[in-house]
Each structure stands twice: as C-alpha cells, then as structure tokens.
Length: 511
Image (tube, rainbow, N blue to C red; front, side, top):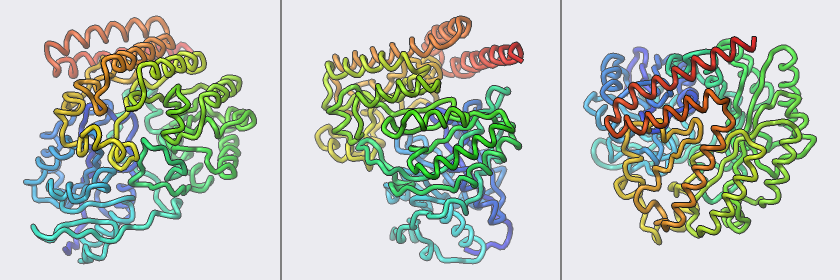
C-alpha cells in the first residue's frame, strides 16, 4: 500500500466492566512512535474512569476522524468486548491492527475475527514499520512480529520481532493525546497521570503469570531517562505523586540506588512522592530507609496466600515468615503498603483458605489497603492454565463467557457495589462453578476474605467518607436491581462527585 498523504491512526481501548485508573501506557507509547513518524493520532480510552463511550460512539468518532488504520488493544479476560468492537468497526473498511497479550498468543484467532494485521509482542517498532507500509509501499512480509492474511486465504506469521534492548530510545508516552477530562475531574485526580514504567520484563517465573508482550528478559531504562520523564510530567501536568508500575522496581540494585539518588535530589526542589511494586525478599532495612528519604510513600506487594506449600507450588520463592518480616520492616520505615492476595488455587481447601484469612488479618495491622480482587484466573500462556485446562475443561474459556464467570464478563461496567475503590465485595467471578469448580465451603471462605477486606479498607477512611461509601453501596444495590443503566449514569456519577467535593474541601482546610 502506498499513500503519500499524512497517515491518520485511531488507537482504541474498548470499554469493559473494569476501568483504567491511569492512561494505558501501551497505547501512549505507540502514539508517541506514530507522532515521530508524522502521523496524526487520536486515542479513545473507553475504559477511562470518567469516560462514557459505548461502541456506537466509537464507531461514530471513527467515521468522523476517517483514520487510515485503527489499532485495538486486546486482553483475554474481556476479549469479547474487543471482538464486538472489531465487528462494529469492520464495515468502515479501514485497516484494523490488533495488539496486546491476546493477539500475541492467538494471532490466527484474532485474524479470523476480522483483524487485518496482528502485531505480536512489543509494538513500538512494529507500528512504525507498518506506517512505512502505508507511506512507501514496504511489503508486509518484510515486517517482523506481525501476522496477516493474504486476501481471504493464507495466513502468514512473520518471524518474531526481537525485544527492544535499548528502552531509552523510545519516546516518552504521548499522554497529551488522552482526554484529560476522562481521568482528571479535580486536583486530587492528578496522580492518574503519574504512571511510569522504568523497565520491562520480569526475572521471576510465577506459575500464574504470563508475559507474552515484554517477556521474562529484564530490560531497563537508564536512571537519567526515568528522571527526565518524571520532570516532564511534573512540569506539564503538575503531577507530584508517581507510580512505578514495574513488576520489580528494585530488581537491579545498582540502577535502583542511582534512581534513589536522583529522586532525592529532585525531592529537594519539588514536593514529590512515589510508590512502587516489589517483592518481600528484595527489601531490607537500609533499602527501606533510603526509599523513605527519597519520597517513597507506598509499596505494593504480592503476598498471594497464607500457605507455604502453595507459595512453593506457584514458584513464588518466598515464605509466610518472610512476608511477616518484610511488613515489620516496612512499618518501621513508616511506608504504607498495598497488599495483593490470590484466592481459589485448585488444590487449596477451605482450611487452607483459613490460613490465608489469618494472614490477611495479620497483615491488615500494617497496611492501609488490601486489594479486594484476587480470584485466580488461569490466563492462557501460564503454567497453571496448561496444567489444569484439561482436568477442569476450561480450554478456550475466553470465548465461553456463559460458562466461566457468567455476566461478570458480559456487562459493560461494574455496579458501584462491586467496584474496587474501597474493597467492595467484588466476587462476581464466583458466579456458577468458576474455573475450578469451587466447593460451597471454599466459596464461603473467599467471600469471607472479601468481606473482611471491605471492612478493613473502609476503616482507613474518615467517618464521613465511610458513611458516604456505605450509603452509596446500599443505593447502588437497590438501583441496580431496577435499572443497571440508571445505577451507572446517576448513582455512580453522583458518588464520585460527592467524593471529589469532600477531597477538595479536605485539601483546602489543610493548606
């Protein structure tokens, strides 16, 4: 294909029952590369917290924008939302490019659903070369990392694209292309633009995790490049709270210490704070002290379970004793924590769940927030999926939504009483038998854990916030029975307006 005019590309995140708390950096990086190629780019994130896009809206915007290509990002859990959007966009006769974890794992399935090109793995270099196909007639067969269909016949899978070694050469994510109003309604929302990835890949090999895009080869940006992006976000959007989304922010100790030095230097000039993810076995008292001095306000830890034999079986390589020791050290350093647990391992009994609940209650003394959602999903490409798909009959579950998690994956959005903000009882995945055909006893224990987490997370709020949240949970449940659309358009909107007003008032009083 050859087209000498400016290329227009529409990048879309479909809507789904869960929301993107921050602009998706995968689309932001692609957009930045496209802008370097002099393309005109538009991004629609229909899953943004304040967005209200449905499929018809997206199609109308595509008709107005008239892109040469439409890029869709796809994940397995809500793949049918992506396929529905793809089918709605197909009549526009635009080149549809699919990327993300699911197309990387199942390119032929996605092509059969109507995509013209599948970008497998990391997409930045690939999307740049696809632009060359538009502009100077480069052959698709010469572009590594893509799959495509020759007309309506043969499917071609080009050679895999090597992982990007030098992450510093990537442009900073094009966050300016997102609609600010979809993420930021007041000053307390500014943190949403503070998401930063400083590395790609993960050196660990947990059996419930898959890395089809970034792989397990650990690659990282230089400390100077990371701080340059942080300064840009601080100056452009006034962001002062940054979230490092790396799976293991401190995996490379030398680089990590250099980043801490630079953050400490920046902190002298600007009132910034930051949070990160890491592992309990990568922390010690000296490290935590330096993190605190450099502005660390929070650490997210994957705890998963209260059973040592499960931790060993999922290849977590830590023990419950190490978890407790790490939490003590973090508490002594006066750094807050967010903890992630996982329920429903197929070999765990109700008694095993009791051990996890005991650990949750122990950890609650040290943490202001425990993530409310953690029911095990056997994602394709994981060791757990491969081990149990035949025994439990869930192979290809992503296209069998009526059997697995039922209406949880068919609703356009989640009602307020099932959202994560304060740890609401989001156990919609327990509809039916679930992936692993849980016994009634195990289901009860999972709900018991969810109920405790909800109460704990609410305790961390002041009494007025607790009253507002509990009132709206009650209102949400009642309204949802009458009209899900009314619950979304009225109750949810009013709830977040109320919280925003309260947060603004608190901020003004503390000045």
